[in-house]
Length: 291
Image (cartoon, rainbow, N blue to C red):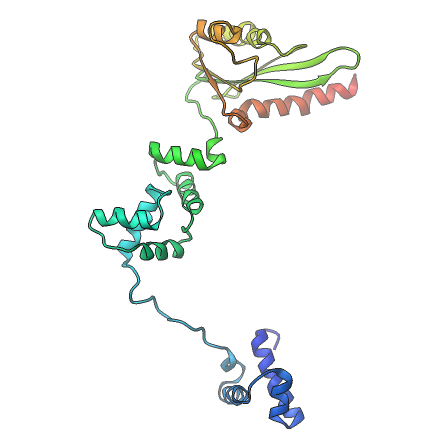
């Protein structure tokens, strides 16, 4: 009884109530059933017990005879993976050009069966396929994902050798009571997570240049490792007129490519952001409590 559904429990209650009252019409009025339904339920219960009270689901038990052939449905799925922003009508038109006759309704039905009705669902499928398999994205697919997906746009940066890409950022630690504001310049090598840091009392282009000129570049030159590019945000200590800004002049003089993150996308510079958090948790907060 505990494993039966609510519908079956009501039917059993109807049979029990009719037996207690000895009046079928009154029991049906109380339970909200028609008398014909009562006799159908009683006949089913007498023949097959509780299992016979389960209602059979309506609709076709097998796939509809007019459903698309599996190979055509696969063509639709492949096309939607290649062009995730195209809707059913556009997909039907494009498939018709290569000799596959299918209506927009048929395309929509195939998309419904695979949860690909909306553009967002198709883009998520493309992103999951690229993440979980060795699927190689085309330039057009990359542009589509970068346009519609914040996570893909802010995906992890990569480097193939030491010095190929450095991440640099400014971190405001706080204000020393009665002294000055304290800033920290941080540079992290993306390939090996080697970090350089230096503390300053101002947030100016000259401080960003000082860390590079005093620590980072001499270290790489001593090892014979060229620095290929530096990724920074769009703050004023890093960006300005190329012919006048100190940081722009230093990178140009050293032959280093200066790249900028997308606006309001700090995750693009995730290496240095994580380093700043580590410095805050393991150094500044510890020292600040003991001095």
